[in-house]
Length: 90
Ligand SMILES: [Zn+2]
Image 1 (cartoon, rainbow, N blue to C red):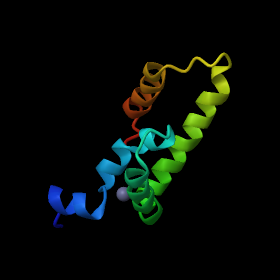
Image 2: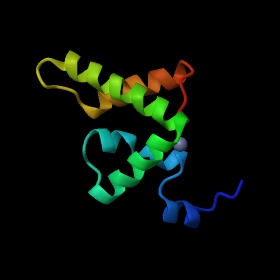
Image 3: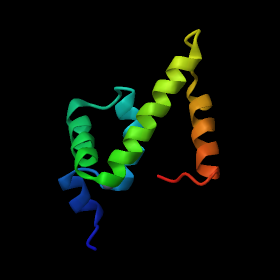
């Protein structure tokens, strides 16, 4: 499988890149152009789509649970890290 950084950059993110930017996308922190590339990868990649759907639900649950508006990124990262430790890998 040809997978050079340059071709990935030209064609949009690969799976790793898309997943790295997924949280930023869900937080609305990406520029419109980067967001479009990440979304286009996710919608055309079943693996990433499943992962993105999971993280969307995860963030929604987190937002629903935070109550007072306190949802520090460390908390989110702690939960994600626990999920990864438990065998969930992106
Ligand atoms: Zn992918």
